[in-house]
Amino acid sequence: HPIRVTPDRVEAYRVELPPGQLAGRHTHPGPVTGYVERGRIAFERDGQPVRELRPGDVFFEPAGETIRRFDNPSGSEPVPFVAS
Image (tube, rainbow, N blue to C red; front, side, top):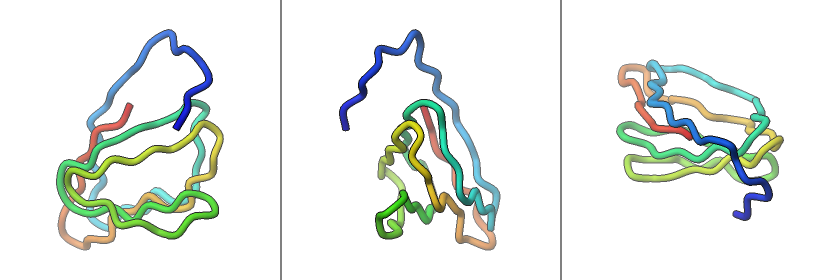
C-alpha cells in the first residue's frame, strides 16, 4: 500500500488486548502496520470482510480509514501484537 508522506519518525508499540477486548470502530491520523504475536484478532477494514489474524500475520490500517473491528474474540487469552 503506497504511503504518500515522508514521516518525521516511526514509533513502535507492543500492545496486549485483554481477553474479550473489543477495540471496535476507530481511525488513525497516520497509517498503522502491525504484527500479531499470539492469539487471534477479528480485523475488519471499512468495506472489506472480517479477517481472522493469527500469529505471524500482519495488518495495515490506512490513515483516516475506518477500522470496524479489531477485537480479541478469546474469553481467556490475551493477544499481544506490535504496531507502528
